[in-house]
Structures are given as structure tokens and as C-alpha cells.
Length: 282
Image (cartoon, rainbow, N blue to C red; front, top):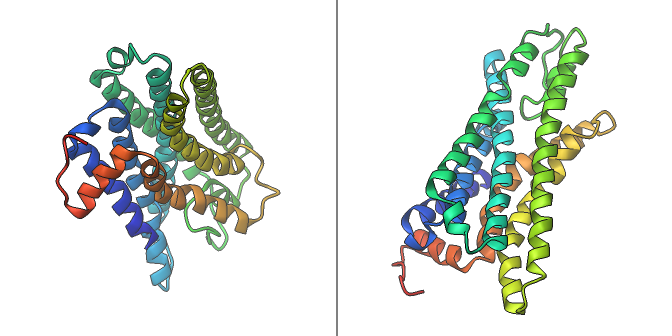
């Protein structure tokens, strides 16, 4: 049910952005691409999880495991970059409103989206290749619902501290630089918002940024516990719960978060889901 609702919610956002002319703006273009990314992100883990629930063998091939490992981390990295790009978009919209349309052109938006996908998918082939070359022995039972770093390293016969350090350093750098950029953007943005003379203007600015901040907090809060802080003191059950939150629940909540306080998006989603005509005058 969660998987179906995630596909429905994010698919509806993509359709709304595509079909509603009022949503043909840089912010919604990025949001539509982000929803597309979320569909692939949740699909990298949940279908196999559902198959394991229904199957008696609960097995995954060696190549299938590392393919899932690659897509899971590549899509996760792309999500971090998307959130940073969306923070940049909100910063330009509020801090430089007069130049926003000339800065956030369609060409720049397409280039930023392409870079998010490229960097995300080009960052992990080499580290994951070296991890796949480690000798694996024992029962080969992965104590997780997906092929993650810690469960795989637990199956390795030989310790690989250098490989493990490189992988976690790379993941930490991606998280650190993107979250620092997001925090810097919102610090400057909030400073500009508090200088707005009207209360209505401040409320509108907070409304456009509140949903993005909620998504950032939910995603980064759980991911940084898993991949930045040492996980040796975290129980296996807690690691599974944290992974479930940022890999399954976050893509489910994102359509709700982005649409609840956005009148244009709510109207467009209503048209997509219930087949109502889009009012050009609303």
C-alpha cells in the first residue's frame, strides 16, 4: 500500500507539472524531476523487499545485490544534489526576485538537473566495484531488507578498512557539502525574509520554503545518523528502521508535504486525480 501510494503521489506531481501551464516555472520543473527521482529511489528497494516477503527463499543474486547497492546509493546521492539545487532556486526567488527569471532559465534548470543525475551515477561505480571484489564467506545471510554497506561488510572474510573508509568518506562529503549549502542558502534567505515589511509577504515566503525545509530535515536527519556518525553503537533493528524512514517513508511523505501548503499544486493535483478542468483564472 505504501509503495502504491508513493507511486501515485509522485506520479500525480509529475503529471500536474507537465499538464498545468501555471506550473511551468523553474520551481515546479525541479519538483517534477525530484518526484521522478523519488519513484526510482523507492523502486530500487521496495519491489525486491515485497518479493522477499512473498517468497520462501528470500534470496538475491550476487550481481543483483550489488546492482541494488549501486542504484540505491547513486539515487540517494542524486537526491542530496536535487535538494541543494532546490534550495538554490528558493534563494534566487526570494533574495533576487527581480533577476529570478533571467537567472533561473530553462537552460540552466535542465543543466542543473542533468548534473544531479550524472554526478549521482558516476560517483559510486569504482568504490562499489572494489567492495564486490572482497572475499565473501559464511552463511551469506544479509541481516537487512536491502544490500547496504554494513550488512555487506559483515559478510566479508577479510577486513577492508581502507575501502570502507573511502566509501564512508565519500558519502559523508556528499552529505556535508550539500547540507552546508542548503543551510547557507536558507540563512541568507531567512535574513531577506525578515526584512520584508509586510506580514503577508513574510508568510508567503515562509510558505514556499517550509515544505522544502521539512523534506530536508526528514531526509538528512536519518541519513546522517546512518552514514556520517559511527553505526557500531546502533542496533541492527534501529539501522533497519532508519533506512526504512529515509528510503521508503520520505518518498511517500514528499508529495503530501509539497502539496499541503501550496494552493497552485493542490489545484493542479485535484485536476489530475479527479479529472477536473484547470481554471486558467484561478
